[in-house]
Structures are given as structure tokens and as C-alpha cells.
Image 1 (spheres, rainbow, N blue to C red):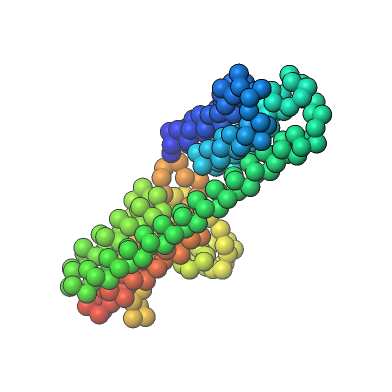
Image 2 (tube, rainbow, N blue to C red):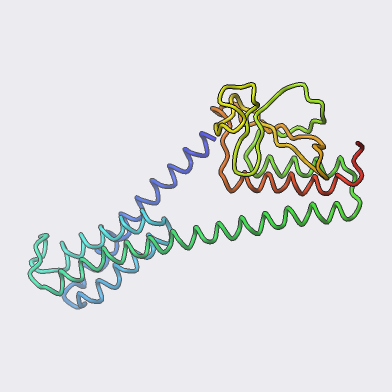
Length: 254
């Protein structure tokens, strides 16, 4: 997990560096032609740099590219040259627009990517449930269905493992259900207390036809401090357990 975070930070640093260098390189290329190209065309080229920063590196890349574009446009392409002073109102407006374009472009890219992630997650969830339903309808053995759901839970929640247990259980664990974690009534706080589970294990019960068929014991990574899941992932995990319970219940021994 740490190596992944380190790699992500390195990508972010490289992205910010590219967003800084892009407008500067554009300014260096355009500078020899300053007397032959209009400020409007220069601004449009800088807009391309801003959009590139937004597409490549999201909101942060867009903002950095926009600020750099406004800076180099002001410094190299507005009179007096070589100064951050601007004499013409049109150039002031153009400089401000470069920043505004960066903010808008970055926000649009972030929202588009967020919507794409949500759509991808919804497709994956639907595929998981459909796969389980198809296997159950095809008469797949109970053990195979349990193993399949266990693998899906590990992948969905980023677990170290998920083992199947049948009642009676030898240990009492906090229970993951729709929208909350229930703690046994003999623990401080009572059965309705909401909290992260102590240690790195939590139970996900599987119910079918009004009876508890068994449970998955969800084992978080060693470095987990308590067990905490994203609300959407938690709901998906419970839905998988409910789907498994519906598939197992008809042939499950009493």
C-alpha cells in the first residue's frame, strides 16, 4: 500500500512538473515570432497548454498550467515586455481568461473522470451479481459459489482474506450490515453503536429464507487500524452476501 502511495505521489509530482514546463516551452517556441503573431493567437496556444494540463493531470495540472500560461503571456507577450505590468485592457482580460479557463477545464475533467469511475463501478457490480446468479441457476455447487463470493469480497474491499464459517461460531465479531456495523450487546456501547471494528476482522453474515446460513470473516491487511470500508463498497459487499444467501438457501441443510 505504501509503495502504491509513493508511486502515486511521484506521478503527481511529474504531472505538476509537466504542467509547469508546458507553458514555459510554448513561450520559448513562440518568443522569436513575437512580432509576427498576434496576442490573441498566443493566448489560444496557451489555452491548449492549459487543456493539456487538465486532461493529463486533472484539476491541479489545469491550475498550474493556467497560472504558468498567464505568467509567461504577461511577461513575454504583453507590453512592456519583460515585466509583469500590462498596459492594454485587452491583455489584462486575456490574462485573466487564461486563469479562468484553467479552473473550468480542471473542474470539468475531474467531474468527467468521477462520473466515468462511478459508471465503471456500477458495471462491475452488475457483472458480479449476474455471474453469481448465472452460476446458481446452473446448479453450481455451494462450495464453488462461496469461493466465488469470497474472492469478489477480497477484491472489492481490498482484504487480506475472507474465510467462510458455519454456525455455531467460535468467536464473536462485529457484524457488517446495510449502512452500519453492529456490535454485540455485551460490548460497551450496545448493539446499535456505530464504530470501526477493533483489530482487523469483521463478520459478514449470509442469510437465506430467514435463517443465517453462515458468515464470511473479512480480514483486513496487517497494517489496518480498525476495519473501515467505503460506504458504497460496504453496500455492494452486503448485496453479494444477500445474493449468495438467496442462491444457497433452497438446498442448504437445516
